[in-house]
Amino acid sequence: MALTFYWYPKCGTCRKAKKWLDEHGIAYEAVHIVENPPSKALLKDFYEKSGLPIKRLFNTSGQKYRELGLKDKIPEMSEEEALELLASDGMLIKRPILAGDAFAMFGFKEDAYEKLLKK
Image (cartoon, rainbow, N blue to C red; front, side):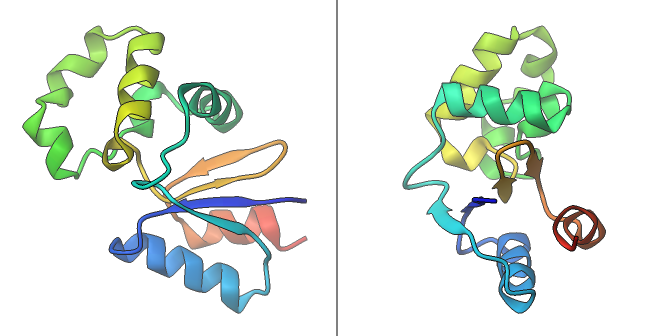
């Protein structure tokens, strides 16, 4: 199973997730989410695989999110508009993203990684 790990090296949660993957010997391709944000098409694919509501794809604790006042804007956005916005700036995306052929996970919860990857 080929895994792609989108992360931001200055993010503590991303570093924790990366450390967990490394400690468990799980191979992945690391992608800097700010330097190489996923495209709109890729985000749509991740969104569909994740089963999450679109608002959960946003980094709600990020400075950019607050600056843009997205809390009030997201409920009014179409799925297309939200994906377009997310694709425009890696800092808006909830991270890390761990994506495989049949799944995509936003954020890091050790038990979720454990359940998914330790088979």
